Image (cartoon, rainbow, N blue to C red; front, side, top):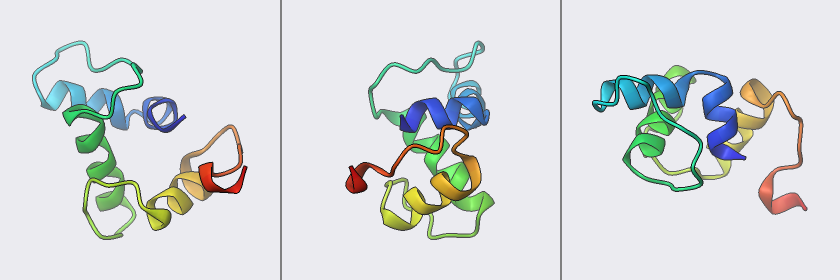
Length: 77
């Protein structure tokens, strides 16, 4: 779900290009360097602490600002 939201909002693609993949990045279920960079970009955009980690504050921003699916947050299932 995280990568799909980042991808839908172009954070994942931009991070992939910046890290050397001209075609961007695919949703692959792996929290690697591209996903971490995309998370950092999102954190910068919303002026929250830039850690590269998806903590509760980051999940709230993802859910409220970027989540087109409106799925429950992972810890609220």
